[in-house]
Length: 401
Ligand SMILES: *[C@@H]1O[C@H](CO)[C@@H](O)[C@H](O)[C@H]1NC(C)=O
Ligand SMILES: *[C@@H]1O[C@H](CO)[C@@H](O)[C@H](O)[C@H]1NC(C)=O
Ligand SMILES: *[C@@H]1O[C@H](CO)[C@@H](O)[C@H](O)[C@H]1NC(C)=O
Ligand SMILES: *[C@@H]1O[C@H](CO)[C@@H](O)[C@H](O)[C@H]1NC(C)=O
Ligand SMILES: *[C@@H]1O[C@H](CO)[C@@H](O)[C@H](O)[C@H]1NC(C)=O
Ligand SMILES: *[C@@H]1O[C@H](CO)[C@@H](O)[C@H](O)[C@H]1NC(C)=O
Ligand SMILES: *[C@@H]1O[C@H](CO)[C@@H](O)[C@H](O)[C@H]1NC(C)=O
Ligand SMILES: CC(=O)N[C@H]1CO[C@H](CO)[C@@H](O)[C@@H]1O
Image (tube, rainbow, N blue to C red; front, side, top):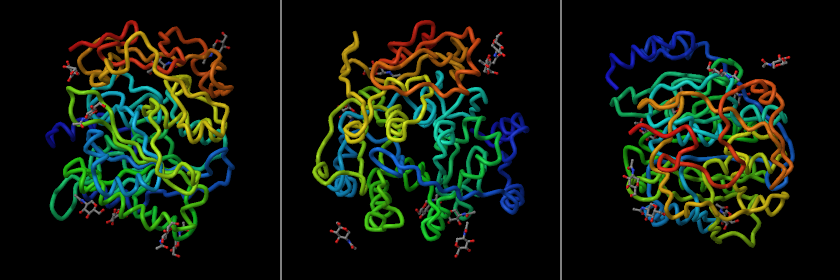
């Protein structure tokens, strides 16, 4: 995006607090931005802390062959059936916390309406503390499109890799912005023993492999995690998920590597592979199952819970059994929706307010039910494991090429 377009799109969002990207504005906001250090201690069935680290754009085979990621995988569980939900980056991040990507097929300055909830609402409802740690975020709660390295102009922080800020339900609440922090505050929280129970960690555009390679991403991840593996301030029945936003090659199936590691992994599962079908919605369903959270009523409801967690909850792992074989699903193209800039149906689908007792007893978050109670919007979530893609869109959401 050109600087002119960037300035224009930022101006159009003037009602959001912290979107200005000029260095003087950033310095001024940084001086006053609020930061919170939430903690809690809600026991989970399989873990008491969950940390997710997202790396970028790497095909499964490349990732699994990286020596540092392989080193981490040996100490955890390899998820070999993990799939992204579409291309490019942003809709995958959006999906991982909100249960859908609402047709998004771009990396734009998107803002999801306040009446759409994310995992943040589910966590807060049960008193589970959370924070995001974004490497090189210029200050807590920054909402701008990007922040470059001030010495060399290289891409550092980008909004498209910061899922919480894309949901206005978070971005319009100062006490939620106050939990979207620079990764330097991860180390402060570690020192002070003020880490939250749910954390989403995004390395910068160098560290996550986006502008570099899986070698850099693997090195960064091992350097970050190796000291933490023996650190009792971090490892407190902790489960870490290392994954990627999407597979690099658009013409092949969008399969990515997932690794689960941490002291919450039972020792007999260390070094094993779990080949069940998972996708980014499993990141929500697994956390919901662990702490008995409510659901979002979207694709989170049907998503498989990671086996290691499902073993301790009442969740049943299902096999992909749709009319379309899993191997014929590429997940490489978005269906239509509000954020699809090619056109097509621009209506938000409503969450499914019905009972989802088929595979587990969790129910939709009451505030979501209330908000959408009278909605006449289409509902395309059937609580099955199978999810659509652009080639197999939900009814009424056929994409425009
Ligand atoms: C953000 O973190 C980076 C390291 O990731 C650090 O170099 C930088 O000084 C931090 N910036 C602020 C404003 O804390
Ligand atoms: C990203 O962070 C790493 C440290 O993890 C740092 O060495 C690098 O300079 C940062 N990249 C940019 C573009 O600022
Ligand atoms: C964390 O510890 C440092 C150093 O002891 C201190 O300066 C800082 O205020 C503490 N932060 C919080 C949130 O307590
Ligand atoms: C960390 O823990 C592992 C496994 O428990 C052990 O093999 C290793 O020696 C420990 N490393 C350090 C630096 O204590
Ligand atoms: C998705 O993959 C299929 C199968 O390789 C290919 O025919 C199609 O062109 C791809 N779509 C996009 C948008 O890359
Ligand atoms: C839905 O309809 C009921 C009954 O008419 C009304 O009491 C309620 O306020 C409506 N809810 C919303 C969110 O509009
Ligand atoms: C949610 O917000 C969107 C955008 O403002 C609106 O079109 C839709 O009707 C709202 N839905 C409900 C149920 O409030
Ligand atoms: C190049 C590469 O490794 N791509 C992988 C992306 O995912 C597909 C489907 O699982 C793999 O077959 C490819 O090897």
